[in-house]
Image (cartoon, rainbow, N blue to C red; front, side, top):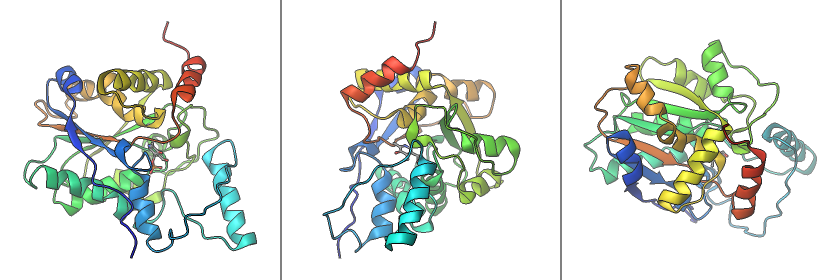
Length: 279
Ligand SMILES: Cc1ncc(COP(=O)(O)O)c(C=O)c1O
């Protein structure tokens, strides 16, 4: 039986982030997955035995994820292909939940984090993190979800108290660009069992976080991941502590460095041209 397709990624302290926050910050380095992001955890789990044929043809279609999804669904109808959902499937969530099991194992199953920070697109990673925290008995650990303005379907749903569909994706963080969050993620946000704090940053803040992370940690990640990093670099966690929504002292903070494979020097330079600097 092939797989698992993911590796056990490092959990490393970020000295720069710990200094900024005044508490220990651990990075769960999903950027170190062979595929460049956490996604392989869930997709690998969903596809066990189906990924044997490595001779795949890759077709990229659509401006935003919803358009690509429509085309994928059409191909399942017309060409009988198998549809692999990117964020809305229980097996994906189960696969993604291993990120938390690994963190718990690294911490000797005892010391729980003060909070976990995670980026949200369609909400698959969030569902995995929430499920994983429950699985290890850490359901009282708050989750701070990060999205960029203009790719904020989870935040919009939380604010509206119901699932909403965004009219358009206006953020450059295209991997966060689902117009509608999955139902399970919304249900988690409504649960009283586990605190989920939904926060937004601008593309500028996410880009600043990508650049700072590259300089300080020497790792290049996508803007989608920059949103999570900006929770520390842009002072979101500190603000939540000031507001009494997160405790101070916090214990240790975990940031899921979800990674992303759509980033290289050229793509970073393009983002730097597209996203205006703060004046
Ligand atoms: C790097 C990165 N971060 C975050 C996300 C968002 O994940 P989800 O759609 O499971 O919320 C994605 C999705 O593709 C991604 O590639």
